[in-house]
Length: 282
Image (cartoon, rainbow, N blue to C red; front, side, top):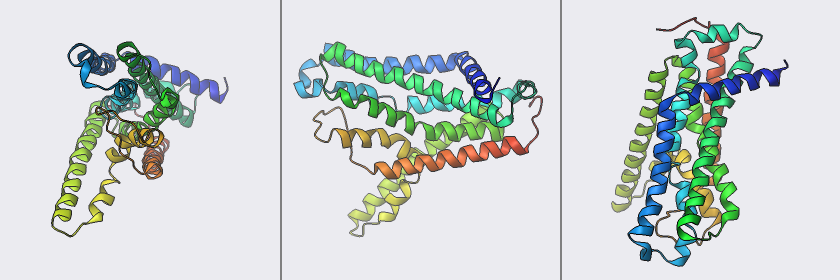
C-alpha cells in the first residue's frame, strides 16, 4: 500500500465511524426538514406574498438556509470525535500500530471528516435547489449554485478545523464539542455586542471603527458571512425579501478562515507528533 492508499483507508474508516453516530444523522435530517418547511408554508399559506422574481430565486433561500447554524453544528459533531474517540476507545494505538505514519493518519482523519461534511452540504444545497423548482417553478441564476456551494464548503472549514484541533488537544470528544459550541455561541454574542457598541458610538456622534474591525476577527463573522458575501457579489440586484445579502469583504473573510484553518491544523499535527498515543483515556 502506498501513502495515498493508506490515507484513503483512514478516510473511508472515518466516514463509517462518523455515519454510525445517530446524532449526526438526526441533525442532518432536522436541517433538511427545516429547509423544506418554509417552502411548504409559502406555497400553502401565503403564495401571493412573493413576486415572480422572488419565486425564481428561492433556491438561494434554500441553499443558504442552514449554512450558518446547522452546517456548523454538524461539522463540530463530526470533528469533535474524529481524534478524541480513538483515544477514548483505545483504538488510536491499534490504528497507529499498523503500517501507517502519524501524518498519514491525521490527514486521513481530517479529509475523511471534512469530505463527509462537504457531502452533507452538497445534499442540503441540492435540497434547496430542488425545493425551489418543486414549489415555485423554474429558477434563475442557477449557474452560480456551484460557487455558492463552494463558499459554503470553504466557510465550514473554520469551525471544522478548530474543533478537529480541540479533539486532538483535549482528547475528550464531548468536551471538545462543548468547547467548540461554546466558542461558536460566545463569538455570536460578542459579535452582536461589538455591533451594538459601534451603533452607540455612531449615535453619540463619535463613530468608532475599532468595534467593527474587532468583530471581523471573530470566527463567526467569516464562517457565517462568506457565502452571503459571495452570493451578493454574484447577484447584486437580487430582489427577494426573504434573502438578505450584504456586500462584504470576500477576500478578508477568506483569509481569516485560512488563518484559523492553518493554525488549528498546525497545533493538531504538532500535538499528535510530539505526544504519546495513550491506549485509552478515561
